Amino acid sequence: MNNELFNHQKSDAVKWVCTLLAFLIVGVLIAGIICGWFDKKETPPAEQTETGFIVTPDEMSGVSLSVKAMSASANEVNALAENSYTVTAKIQPATALQRANWSVAWKNGSSAWATGKTVTDYVTITPAAEGALTATLACVKPFSEQVILTVSAAGNADKTATCTVDYQQRLNVNNLKLGGSALSTTSCGFKAQLDETHTMEIDYSYSEGTLPYLGKSESDYNEFICAGIAFTDEFIAAYNKANGSGKDITRRMKRVNLSSEYAHTREVEFTDGAYGNTVFYSLLDRSFSDEVMSALRAATNEVGEENVFKVGIFKTDNAISVSYVECDTWYKLGLDVNTVYMATENISLNQGGFVF
Image (cartoon, rainbow, N blue to C red; front, side, top):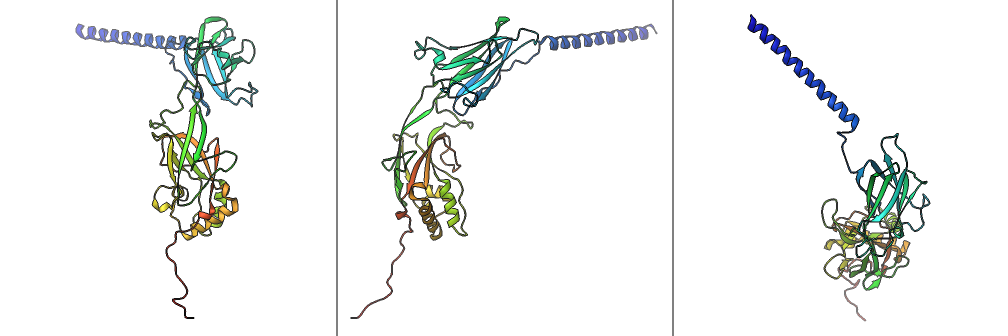
């Protein structure tokens, strides 16, 4: 009987100890949440505009940053700015002095490129008002040394947040030729001939930048410089009107890899699509026929020989795809309509002989 009483008392004691431990654990968790012991410290993802001015929030100490791309022209930023961001600082707690100080500096001011250069000649940070928590970060011109943006709390200068600011190189096309003739964005300098192979050649350079123009794609393949040949929208409309019951064409592109070891040149075939991955095979997705040739001639005559093709330069990791890419700059390329005819298969006379 005494043993049963002893065991019962022992069991009750264990239950009370477990209950007390559970209350202590809950208390610690609540205190941790209140004090921020278990806050997850995450670095916000990089923000990037299409033009390559890149801002990446970095380490934070008491102040956090959020970044939003904006249009320079729409927000009346310096007219020289290639693009800009609205940067917002958040100071915690909300009862702290809500004022901030902003600055930019070279990450390595003694580097060969940055030595002797003033950072604000390249990147500026302008608060909305003195001490404001929102500021405009603008790129004035390309730079090749990483910039560090720092914001500090006016009430405690030890509390700061930083962003790294990068500039991705741009491609400068110095010259683009096809068939030995320079292509232009304003006038047609060359008319391709059907059933001919013309050589395309590009001369280019890169702008200043902290990040290279070519890198890895999202698929982890190496990027390269590509020329994309496409029909103009006017030609597509004219062709589809002229092709009768034939298959309509849509926006497609013949891609030409110009980042090769062959001095940035590549042969481009304007031959019958039946012979492989030629311009017309890519854009028409069929072999030539009398109907296709007739529509091709009619459309060329309607829009003019100089308004058949356009060529854009972009970077990609895929030279096989015929997916259309909208380029910022288009070069004009024509088609010599006098070469648009079917190959001769035979010839005959209406008479077998004559007697005089």
